[in-house]
Length: 452
Image (tube, rainbow, N blue to C red; front, side):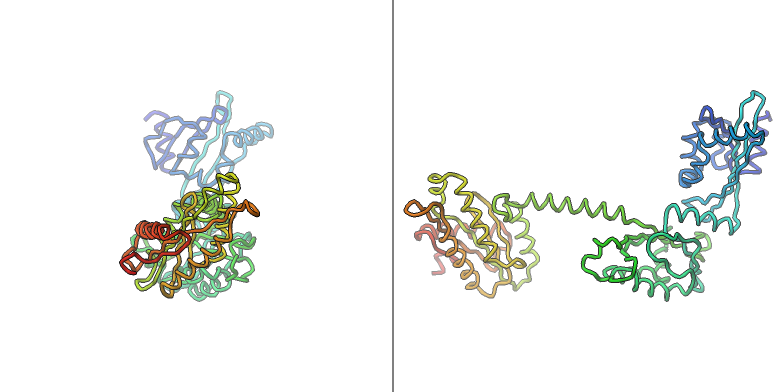
């Protein structure tokens, strides 16, 4: 063996990883890497290697990574050169992808024959429980609320580490199923309580982990425990969104469950804002800007949704409303006056209709559509149409002898006429509008001539 091969062989017996770092050039030479032997003897950029090494070991431990970056190593080396005593450092690391994998990192410095100072980093296994708890505690403060282990056989849990920030923590130990129900009822928002109680029971945890390495649940909490059922609790400053990830502490023995709770409130509110912006954009896309009613596309979608959701015996009516004498308003007084007439019609429809059961929209220049749900009978729809017709007759433009009044012709179609599609109901109601106009305008038609 040459010298390097001998060093590599010896280091591989003593350590999982051994590297020599030239922090002035931000370069690293791999002496031994038992995980990836093909790297032995190769040089890499140190900044890049801290990200890729050992499946992201250092990048998943930001506090450790900050201490082994080139700048930090150079500061330690300069201190050693000034004092004449080079420092050594030992750090404990828990691998984020394998909580049972615990490592001890050793960092030392050496001035070599070329007069330059190099850093040597070695990594070895360390399964000491006190070190594990120290490492987990560091990770908790950096990334999450707490780590809890649960003994599958006894059902007893222990909080391995916890942060003092954020929402209240469960008791540090106790009967898992008993305490988790008490805790959920006090701090979890009402809408999520049953989910948390069901999904977090030990029996269900074990069931969910069959054939899986982990699973997660998401829920809301309030800091002081009241009021968990407030209508606008998600808007409260005390509301927190949480994620709990469940996995086995050791996937081989599967005798200890590990729970990790993380605060995702910021991400939750960011997503909530995105959803609201999308809803606002959709609302604008489906709204007639002039009247504030639904437009052609919005009416078609919302009406079809109502038709699809209706019970088989539920009666629904669609009113097609076509203004009479509207063109003279535009020709005589101009489009602003015509727009004002359309706005008044829109306001009238909102006043005459029920907010929960009825829909109204402007689908053309002077054409409006109304859908009335939960009808008592056909007369109910005719009465609504007559009120609308009479209200529109009071709308007009101008004053005195120059005033031009408008009226409307209304055609009505019903879903029990075999018309379960919005487009079909519109077509039938439109046909009856033409008949209303043929009868002299200003009237309501809800049947075809054959029914007369």
